Image (cartoon, rainbow, N blue to C red; front, side):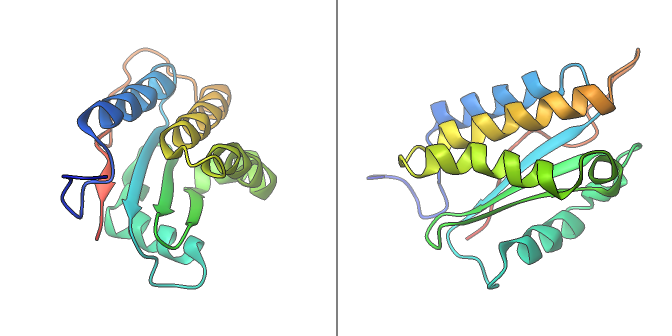
Length: 149
């Protein structure tokens, strides 16, 4: 995108859309969703990078171990979804593949934002099913988009 710094993957408007999608998805669940985006994935397997980022940002520190990281390396065209043990035990590998397909459908049309929104919505639905909020629902992780190089 012309005029954007190297690290800026989204316009301010796009960031607002994505943060709003995360907030909507988290509204009725104790689950947490974060996006991490960078140009290049340093590993052949993007899931390895997603796991590394998840650990580095201590996303495992949620009360119910139900945080989910959506990882995208734009230049390498790699992506992965990584869910903590609480949510993974509920949904298994098949769900993560299905949610990734929701993203890929839009990515193939060069619409990164819609792809991320579709995945966020899908993840939010299962988080609400398995981890509904009951009473107090603190936001344990920032909704801000994390950006690498």
